[in-house]
Length: 97
Image 1 (cartoon, one colour):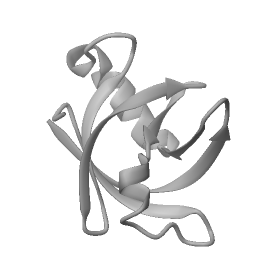
Image 2 (spheres, rainbow, N blue to C red):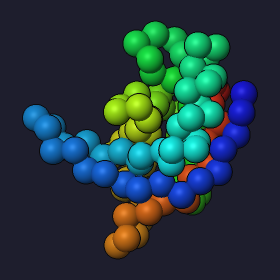
Image 3 (cartoon, rainbow, N blue to C red):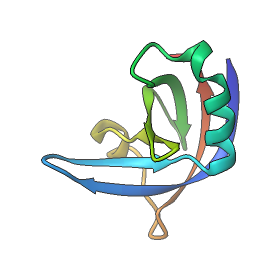
Image 4 (tube, helix red, strand yellow):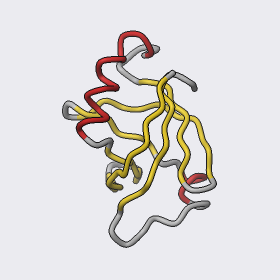
């Protein structure tokens, strides 16, 4: 397991159902990509445990356009405040979910 601390941009995807994600910074995405074969459980998704503020949750990273997106579930978003600038401080452990 490897821990990363970073600031990520929140994006709102407006597909058939709206979803929110935090886009991993390029340098973090590169390091995660190097670990992918060892920690992925299929389809390129990677299990993680993330902490935003006082909220800890488990989810899986989704590969997207050469990087990764961290899903922000409704239950998580309701407990945290997304700042006006759309940037979140995140601590993430890869391979723990």
